[in-house]
Image 1 (cartoon, rainbow, N blue to C red):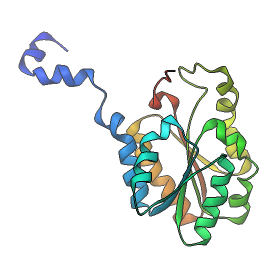
Image 2 (image 1 turned 45 degrees about the horizontal axis):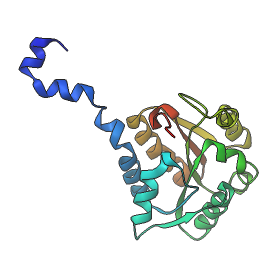
Image 3 (image 1 turned 90 degrees about the vertical axis):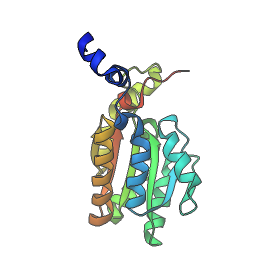
Length: 190
């Protein structure tokens, strides 16, 4: 930004240094999209990338939340939710995809709607080498078992992608995984 522009618009210089609102508000916007899609059950294994969604759904008296011991339990809960007339979302990390690959055949073969949001690991700025193999295999593994895979790298794309994924899952009985790029989540700090 030039000095003359900064002098005329001092707030512009400050806002240029901050991330765009859509990049910091996407978790709340995704929550709103999921609520609008009729989600009334949410299952998860605790994950820093899903912190806001976990917090928002846990505080919502209209939503049943399930803390899982393994991600595959979430797939079974999603199927049971649908049979009970409810809509569900499963939140997991890419490493969890490997834990539930067999269970994913249930919604695929039975044609139950499934919506899974997957925070990616093993990609941009990964510090843990144990996360890399499953991070690299996540998309191919999901496609091989029969899920449709959508991916988002920006907050705005994620909000739109989740809205479309929910429509595909619940209006067309599809099994959809939305991959949330690690760059969007930010570098892990331990």
